Image (cartoon, rainbow, N blue to C red; front, side, top):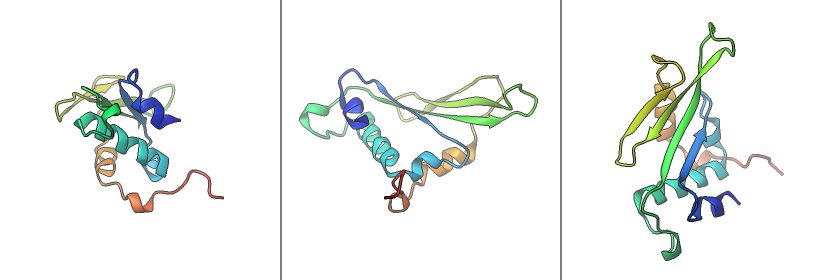
Length: 118
């Protein structure tokens, strides 16, 4: 169902909600959705029906903040759709975790698992 949403003409992009261990990209369906999004944002034609002029891929992640009432803040890498990103943070000075960005770039697809093993 998520692939159909990503491929629909109404969908403008995807936001990956991650944790510090980048666990979503250890699940095969999340890797597939990220792959579809990467294809769509780069202009790669999945099928003549599924070409888009633009498609974003943002990544949001909690950052530990013991002094904050929730214990964490949100930082986000927003896709500038030109090969670069812009950082957004809930509180200025809260940097997006570099370890999350680096793990996200080096995804081992062959190690991804189903969310529920049957």
